[in-house]
Structure formats: structure tokens, C-alpha cells
Length: 344
Image (cartoon, rainbow, N blue to C red):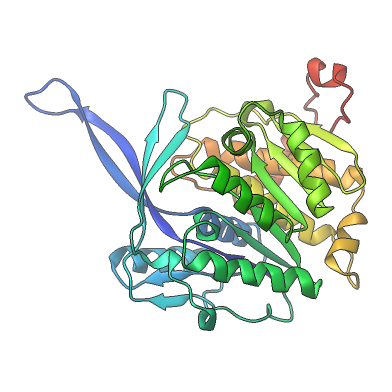
């Protein structure tokens, strides 16, 4: 089982309508879709057939009920969900001409950030192989410190893999210096960090992602993965091996949830590759470069399939397996080979 901790919110995604009567101009409405990086990852893992439990605070308002139904319909265990009195967080999505998403949030006093110590388990359930943490829930007070405590205890216990996705956002009083300190503190509690090139650009303006990946690995001695959008993905394995994987081709509708679909597919395969009977850090080091290449390839395909659907709808196991099989002959671009990086 994998435990996913963090926010479950509603994405309001723009939908262009036919020209409105009497105006000659197209109208716009917003579709309400379940979202939030941790919620998306939990659903993505369940769709891939992985036993998944969601640890989140969900309200009892209509949007909260929609989120609970969404999680349950995907097969996510909701026994660890806290019934919150607060309203559901809303994220208003704006799409550029390439379908890339940007977000603004209605999050003041909403359910996701109000964690208390009594609502969080001291240790994960006995069958948990991994803990996913990420998103705004690890940034916003007062609950961020409570979730960080769960990360710390899980890493100290050593049994379950800790997977961290900072998912940096410029909204809600963003400060690069504050966020950088927060991310560096939290990544030291993880075995795996998955970040985007955009995350790194916000945290370390003007710095190269390879330089940052190397610095991060010195802090946490684990696996560092940087997604590069259409440029694919770069990984730095625990032993220092650099791996690149090109992006899978996609007819992009929007990029909502693509990084979360990548994370779900990656974590699903990591959990399957981890040898039993070892602590998480040792087990991660036992995963060879070939297996890492394979799981990164699968994760890029998962992200591509999600980009081809509106609103962050990640693929199920059968769809993903078929797409991976169809794309096995993808060739690494010449410029990556010339850079001297390990091909996928």
C-alpha cells in the first residue's frame, strides 16, 4: 500500500463555448474538476492497480462530497480522510496557447491546511511501502509543520519510501527565499524528490537544473528526478548515474495533472521494484539503471496520455501498458546523446 498525504481541492478549468447569442463572441465557463497534486496522485496510483490510501482533510460542502466520491470511485481507500468543518479549496486554472496551466487559489481558511497533530498517525500502517507528500499542504501553515513531522518520523523509521514533490506555485504570498529554505529542509527527509524544471527556475533563478539536482542529492543521498516538459526528464540515481528520457509524443489539450500522472506512474513502479526485507534507502540503491530507465519511460507516457485529456485524467493500467508497448522504439534525440548523458 502507498499512503498519499496532502490536499484535495477543486480545479475550475476554463471551457470555451460557442458564440453567445447576440454577441458574436465565444463565451467561457468553468468546469469543476477534482484536483490537487496529492489527490491526483492517489487517484492515479489506484487507477494503475496500486493499493492506495489518501490522508487528507476534506470538507462536507458539495465540493467536498464530490472529492470523496472521486476518490472512492477510483478505488482509493478513504479511511484516513479527516472530515473537516472548513470549506473546500478552489484553484482557478488559466491555460496558455499551448495548454500549459497556471493557477490562482481561493484558500483562506479552507480545509486542506488546518491539520492538527491528533489527525495524523504517528506511524504509517504496517503494510505501507511508501509515503507520497507534496503540494501546497507542505507549504501552508498551520498544517505544513504537522505533515512535515510525518515525513520526519517516516524517514527516521526507515521502512517506507518517502517520495516528495514540492510542486512550487507562485500564488499565496510566494517568496523564492522562503520556499527555497522550506524545500531544502523537507527534501532532506525524503528518499526521492520529483520536481519540474519550472519548480527549479522559481526556486533558483538562472541556475541549471543539473547543478541543482546534484546539490539536492548531496542533501538527501537518494533519487532526484527533474521533469523538463517537452524536453523529457532528467534523473540522478543514488549512485551518481545520470539518466535522460525523451518526452512521449502527445496532442496536448492541457497540462493539468500531467506532473501528477508522471509521479503516480513513477511511484507505482518504484514500489514494485523495491526489494522486500530491506529498509527504504537500501532498497532504492538496489534498483539498477535499467529499471530506472524503464520506470521513467513509463512515467513520461503516463504524463503524455494525461495531456491529451482535459482536466488531469490519468490513464488506467491497461491503457498505460498498451501505450508504453506501442512506444518502445522511441529513440533518444541526438543532442542528448552528444551531451554524454546515459540514454534511456
